[in-house]
Length: 571
Image (spheres, rainbow, N blue to C red):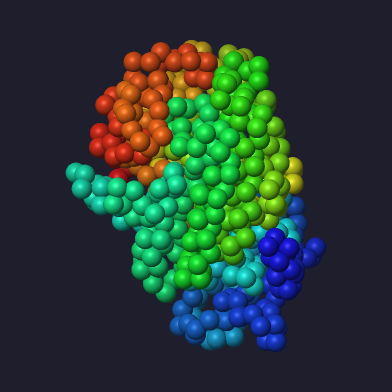
């Protein structure tokens, strides 16, 4: 299937020329391919040391318009200073160009042109994602592969599935959220649907199964584009370093994983009934990173993780899932890539990228089956730490030497995700891959949120006084006290980032505070016990977990109320 997709891509000639042009060519009428909805020719006409002049031509292949607005984002620090033939505004890296009163009419097959001057320093990279009235236009990202831009290929695939699309609101989660006092403020937000055991495919305890969710997504879709977010999460020997999320399959049951879990999911997703949906799959959270950090002679190693490294079933399982699901044209696979407080150290960063590349080429998969990666899934790492940077020092002591940072290269999730994306490309992934960041529980707002840097008494007072992430230790992961809802889900918020998402539904527990008998394959992890004094993986600190938590995935009202109270941006 990967070869087929490559051939289809070749059928549409896309050019990013050395002259500084990004242009999409429409397929010929006899190609048997529907016309793309719009095309953009973005050309840098003149460039000098601190600025450039650009000309943009938009061709509308859809229904006639009486007004229009085009949008794109820059990867660098480009700043538009003046423009003509369009009303041009800019917020951060995001640019909007809307029609003037005299050129709002844009018929089918018609084009409109405008231009602007802009300043920049460093690299003046061409934008890769263009939309016209929310519809993604076909523009090459210059990579020759799939991923982080907004273009399409003739099979209907897009570089960023979130661009120009609504995202599915899970009615089951929405009802629980709305039933909470104040919950209606967030109950319409899109969240991930977790397929965390074989029975979840058909639905458990009278709940919705996969087909029911896809049918509901079609009903929500209407005439626009709709993304459905799935978490595919049932590897053999799952989560070898965290008992709360152990799975139902033993370490050697790779055959059952393939035939009873992945194959049925693939069969449903491949149903032509759902071909109009953009289906985002988060592939096996917390699995591959464990093979890097919790094996061998490391102090954090576990026997279970050593077993999964030795038998290869994490790599095989991820490869099999990528291959089977990636063969479906409207499925977009995003591999879990941990978070900055897990893989941000030098010893973990490059080895993880290499391991992910190995998995992406296992069991018949290729890098073309990977749309991107997701970080911070179900975790709490702050999106951006504004009060200190990795380059700061206090009294001659680097921030990296603080107890909190502990020699990590990254202090927040967005800088890690963007840097890790570059590393992934360098080891062989397509240059157009995009990143997702789970912002469901990393807001850290409320009265405890610092308003500026900490005191410069020492590097630790400086970092601890200024950091938004209020966890006791960056390795703490279970039902964290003080956490808040983070940035609301949104598409293309920053360079290299396909979307901020709420893949972990806020209010669903990470694990039980005490042992609870169950038939869901879920164990008891002391990291979910607020009285636990820790282990090597969290520096032998207190767990920071909330009390009275239910089993992982079950509704935790007290946590949901805390997340709303500490939301940042505030509700």
